[in-house]
Length: 119
Length: 160
Image (cartoon, rainbow over all chains, first blue to last red; front, side, top):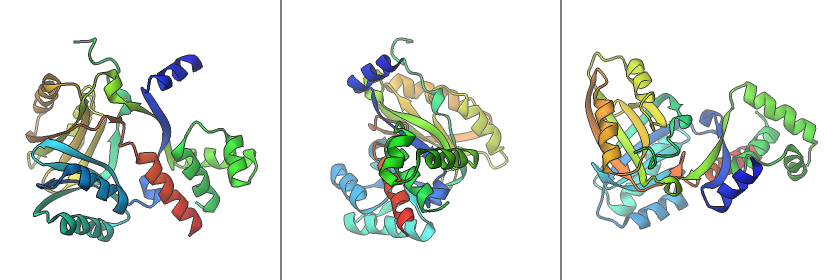
């Protein structure tokens, strides 16, 4: 078992291990998904997010928005400040915010670990 | 929760495979105290679970899809969430306040996998409309900085 885990680490499949804590207890009382339409360079926006905000998962997307991120904030005021910071810095006209309500359902074991072979 | 709890949490968020002895040495307390506090935090629901981070690209995934779902006005969101959770590869589902009612996140391999995901989600009664956004992020389950950022926050809380 340990050898297999080591092997998966060596292959770069397993990249680390962390905890999933109660975000509320860590001080992040508000979680939101934001989508934005922008012409700015996505890499520049990602870098800015990582330096200036508690954004956990910023990523460029295709579909409705040009850029999407999951934001963890201390409260609504802090979420608003973060969004305004990004809006001003990049001159973004439209940002759509969806605040997660209730406890999110994490269903990590639902992932198919062999998605290609099964097709 | 006190300063020591946050310190333990901060260490485990960076690497949850750390032994109690190592954590104890870093913080300057006994391994027994670390274990006792860790177990208490688990019991109280402060620690939900341990997660292994995976590079999804190594097992064939190319990114993640965000399904932004609008439900019909009288639809029961809890029922819809239960059914969404049964769709293979949906790893996060949550109710939201904003233009959409429910958000679901799933890793994807290709366009066909997105189509299958949408087909299954659209079968659910009271799902009125699904907007999709796909990202090339291949970190499982959350972004690569998830542990680091939460650990930083826990450290901040430990020092205040």
